[in-house]
Length: 153
Image (cartoon, rainbow, N blue to C red; front, side):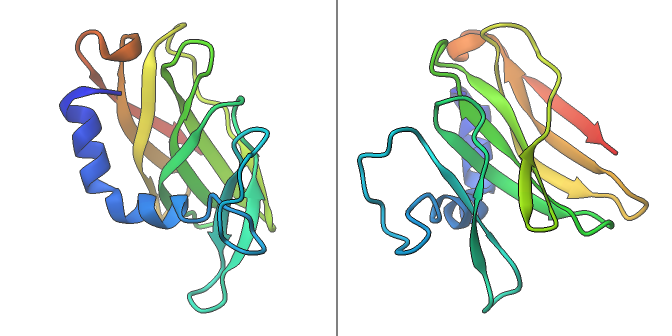
């Protein structure tokens, strides 16, 4: 994503992104040890002072970036962001759900081949479910972006 939406999403979630991206390293040493055969995404889970590093699945072979997280009423943790599609160079939406110590990819509706789409924030609803918000537009930043809102029960 390029343009003002990209900058705004980066500024608003800089703190959370720094926390999430800080763990894109070896879980035993927390220091990057290239070369990586492909990107690996790690997440920190647990209470402050007792965090554990967990491997999460990657969407595709490109870079995966998580920008926000929320814990739902059922105790599951949701993370949202984008993955860079290595074929098109555009961003695809990324949603992860953590349950019982494991992480899984959650599907998001396709917005068309080559669209540039990603999530910047997520909120858990007290009655259940989560809302994720972000932006979507034509591939490689060509054109206008629109607000993206998605609900997951």
